[in-house]
Each structure stands twice: as structure tokens, then as C-alpha cells.
Image 1: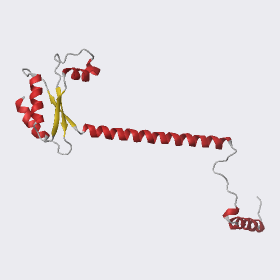
Image 2: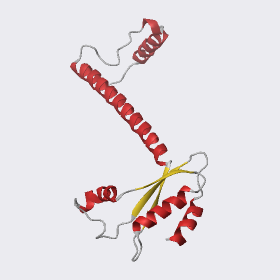
Image 3: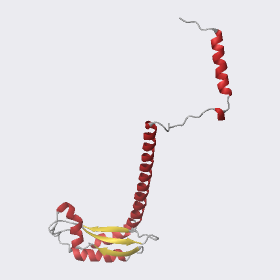
Image 4: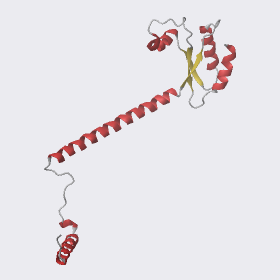
Length: 165
């Protein structure tokens, strides 16, 4: 083994103290990413690409969030009444009567009966085209446009429509 002299340790301590004593401005600062190195250039390129992608993602998320908010506001303005087919029920008369009853309630701006063709188009992705809705027990819908400032009492509408059908 080699023995180090005390002078060696003293010299190292003096060098360390001298380095610490230098002001920060005199020390040479090394760049975070070396400019002359190919790996440094590749790293800068990767950082630029990732920054672009993060900005693009942020923009897409903002756009989707705003669109969903508008869609949610539009949906909250409407409700549907569903009338299920029952033996002996005249569906067209029942739809008309339910639409009239719902339209009389405060808070209901308008009612609209979904016609047979629109009902068939709604079911077309699952049941195919050329569907005759009279052959299947397909419920029919009434769209109720709601006054957002004073929404209707849905329980009262249901209680008024149910016994008449």
C-alpha cells in the first residue's frame, strides 16, 4: 500500500478552498446541452418535437372540451317522452294526445313527435334499412323543448300522461 503524506492532503485542501473562493462569474459555465455534439442536437430536436406535440394535444383537448360543453348545453334544453306500443293502442293518437298534454305544462316551450321515418333511421344501424316499425314493438318518441329558466315538473307530466294512454 502506498502511504500519502500529510503535505498531499494539505495541498488538496488548499486547491479546493481556492476553487470555492473564485467568484461565480469567473467560473466557466458548461452548457446544459453541448452545442457541438450530435447527441446534443438530437436532444434539442426531440425537445422541439415534444413541445410541438404537447401544444397540439393541449389545443385538441381544449377544442373537444368546448365542443362537449356546447353539446351538453344543447342536450339540457330537450327531454323525450317515450310511448311503448301496447296491444289495442292507436300509436298516432297516443302520440298526439301526449304531445298536447305535455305542451300545456309551464316550462315546456314546444313538443315535436318523431315521425315513423325518423324512428326507422334511428334504428337502421342495428336493424338494417327497409325496416317496417309496425312489425316490431318499437317505442315512439316525443321531443319536449324545455324552458331553461323555469323547467317543467317532469313527475307531473308523467302523472298526467300515464293514465290517459
